[in-house]
Length: 396
Image (cartoon, rainbow, N blue to C red):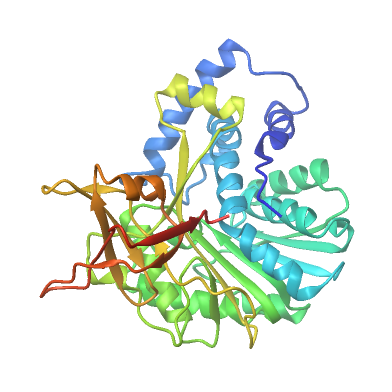
């Protein structure tokens, strides 16, 4: 089963909710208005990030920009990032189990909506056995999310809970029943932004979330690919691997938990990037606002608390873009779970081209035989020569 991006199907619902019932394509006036709001929103969510975690959904134009641009992006990111984990979950649990989902910091629900779409793809007919608990500090965001579920997934049972995550624990939620899938998408980075103990508080927060997992369940974490947010989530990954959970995706398999090698260099993040053909409304608003939206990026991890992860073990993954050095070699960084290994070839190498080396993308899975040993006194390094065999598969 291959991943299918169905983001376009969500746009009519989002349009009707923003317009309070009216359908049809965006008008020129709406496009101009929303593009202007999108620029405001984009500036507020990057750089100094003054709108991150703020009540921007209280303003109708900013809400429209969010619903018709950032909501579809978040939906697509979640779908791409966690499709392999949902396939694993479906195989592990068998057909038609009762599934309880907790969405931490749900906002208007792009992440949990995406999970329901993925579950329906991998377990057809399962929607009537899914219940979703949406949690957020914003009552308006929760109301929007519930309206979206009512429109697109009326079979799914939805509950909402207003929670200030900086002041309230999640653990009382387990008094009802534990969850099979817990997701936190673009939420943890918004917490404790001005607190010097933020990283420790995030670890306690994640540990609290773990306490809500039923056996053989998934914890899915996703954050923006910005340097600070990416590295913060990677640090949280290292902590969670000491808490009796295993990582399913995207990290390569190692015998025992080891610190992520990306943290050795303070200027390096690790993130996926997926080329994307966005829905028409997203492409139109991006063009009008002068934004680039031909791909999306994010850092994410899928964990499980199962005692055995009987899935195919990824050995090597691409963790960088192509880099051209002064000697004319194209280089990628390949991760084996404990270290990153430079893999390079001359830019005109026909054998490397025939094997698809120059077409590698972030998070592609690598299978390599007989790499050229280019190790120096400083570090291990590989190259491509005539004896090298290389195969790769995309993340999804």
